[in-house]
Length: 256
Image (cartoon, helix red, strand yellow):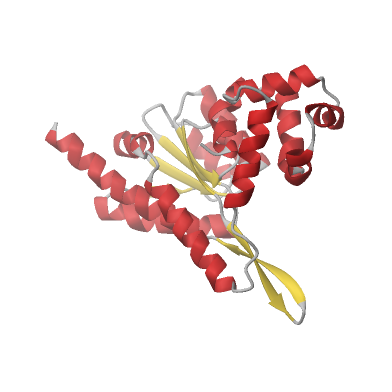
């Protein structure tokens, strides 16, 4: 299990001090891979014991094992190929293999059992992902109602209940509006399914189920300048794989 997956799995257990340590690690991965436990503790203004406890909450014996995993992950990252197409191909191959190993049972159960399904996307790319999701599930006569903004959300919210489902698509999972909506829905025990980037975030922590991906940033060169191209294919691949698993889930329910 990758470090970021461990964070997602144990997010509810992490204290404010733990989250402070994680934010530093996430922003200074290269330095942390070379740092001692005392250097990391000093950088985070915490004790060495706090760093050890943080590592243990993630299932490691201590900071040394956490750092070893970080080094291993660094070697698995897509290297800066001169052949950009090779780097992109490597990312595509790694992405579909990772997504095929996921368990989609929880997400499939939520959408199958929901009386009404509402979706909110927090930006342009997210809206495209939502439209593709709507297109796929309409094959099963599942209608997903799009929520355009705050006024429409609160209008729907008045009658929403635990038999309904809200789907939020947010790249960061930290959008002030989606977190606000998720908090309101939690008060009424309305199920939430979120689709976010593969990292710990406020929306994922508030969700009944979370589907996550890690888009790739590929360096492109133009006029001797390095441009960052961010592939969003992972989101659409996730949707297609989830939909296939959903169909298999429904078939299994019909046979029971």
